[in-house]
Amino acid sequence: MMATGAAGYAVLEHRGVVAVSGEDRAAFLQGLVSNDMLRVNESRAAYALFLTPQGKFLHDFTVVDSGGVLLLDPETERRADLLRRLKMYKLRSKIALEDRADRMRVAVAFGAGALEALGLPAEAGAAVGFGG
Image (cartoon, rainbow, N blue to C red):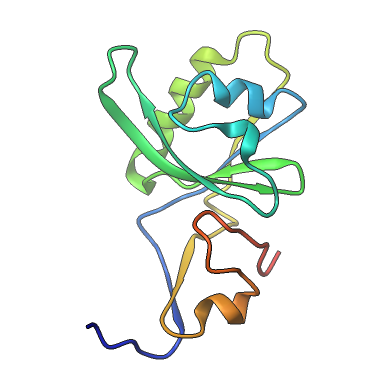
């Protein structure tokens, strides 16, 4: 049995933030990533992969909905590559892509009481907005 410590958090400097906004945001990602983006909402996040057409790994990220904008947290060093690839598929989709790493951070909460402190149920994928 593992011992649990007090609740805490850590800023993940190796993760950045990419925003996908616009009326086609979920449908746009639905055809490109490995998870069901139509299930993502302000109380439900999803972990997804961006793969090549042959199924080879390119990027991984968690997707959360923040006020009608889908936020992705790819690796900081590879964020520009993800944005470039998403722009290739944009075509006529009614979306906007934006790098928000300069004004948003990715953090993880952990330890005993972390879920309660954030008001989250003990359920995989549960999400809640925090700190704007």
